Image (tube, rainbow, N blue to C red; front, top):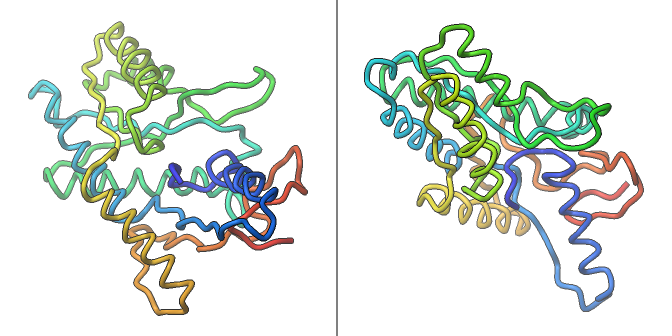
Length: 252
C-alpha cells in the first residue's frame, strides 16, 4: 500500500477494492494480503530525516537554524479521522508521532532543535463538511505574521513526489511563501530511497513470517508501536456503506 497511515481512504477503501477485484474469481482468486502500517518503521522515518536535513541545508545560512518544520499530510474529514484505527483518532496520532520522530532525528543529526507543526493540504468536499486543519497555505501566513524566519515543508503524508505534492506544495505553498517573503524549501518524499525500499522488503518478509507462525522482529520507533497485521473488523469504517466487504482483515 502507498499509505503508511490508518484511515478509510488510505487503507480500508483499498481493501474494499481488493475484495471487489477478486470476488468474481471465486475459488480461482489468489490469496491477497497487505503489510502493516509502517508510519514509524525505520525505513520510512530515517529517509524523511535525511531529506529534511537536506532541505534545511537549502535555506540561507542566516535563517537555517531558526527554520520551522511544517509537516504536511493529506487532509481528511474529521469524521474519518475520528473513526481511523481500531479505537479512533489514529490518523492524526500516527502523523504526530512521525513528526516528533523526524524532528528528533533532525536535532540529533544537526545538534539544533527545530519546532514543528502538523498541517494539511488537498482539502476537498463540500464547505459544510469539517476537515482537518490548518491548511498549509494558511499556516504559512500565520508563521510569517509571527515573524518566523524560514520554513521547511516536510511531506510525511506522502511516499512519492507525485502531481498532488508538486501542485499543492511545490506550486501553491511555495508561491504563498514567496509572496510572504518567507524563505521556504520542500523536503523530498521517501520515494525510491534505498532505506525505504529495503524497509518495504523487510515488511513483506515480516508479514510472510507471521503467516508461517514464526517469531519476528517488528521494528517501530514511536511509542505507538507496530501496527496490527490484520485490520480489526471495525477499523477505519466506511461511514457511507458500513457493510461493504473487505479483504486483509477480520470479518464482523
